[in-house]
Length: 219
Image 1 (cartoon, one colour):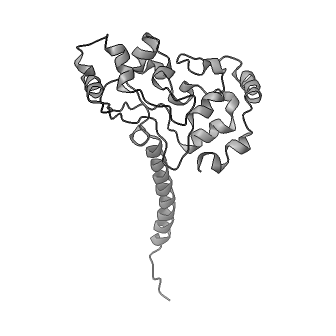
Image 2: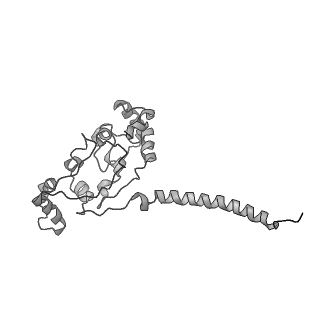
Image 3: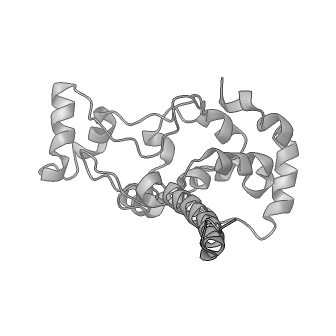
């Protein structure tokens, strides 16, 4: 019987099969890279705001405590945003003619809230409680990064589920003394793991198996 396919067909078939494997692998890597990139996650990308608020100036230079503006962070799931009244408690005396602060003055005069753009946000199907993290000794900078050094606020971490779970599996790596929770310039001590293990027990942080249960964040 005459040969139907040319002998080179075997070579072409092998090259095609191997090529498809590498192409699919490359495509998978590309999807992963895009998923991790700032283009998709907004990590390190400053968001445009109605007022270019600087945490560096207010927190590091002036020394304002986080809780002065984020008043509900210790008692609520939501950290809260400052009202225009809070801003004007200082800016009724400072920088009175600054055009940058005109939106704040208008908001205060008209009693219409400024429409801030959320920088750190989790999906609607995820439950996150600021108060429990603060109570258990998780500092602001653990999730928000070097917030005291940001002239414009940006997202420091992806906030992906695997990032949260990694912390829940190893809370001793991040737990700090409650007195240090709101320190924007906090630096982990050399004995962080020993300190963390002690605080995990002292603050009664649940076992990783419990705090990585689906119901913890998806209710």
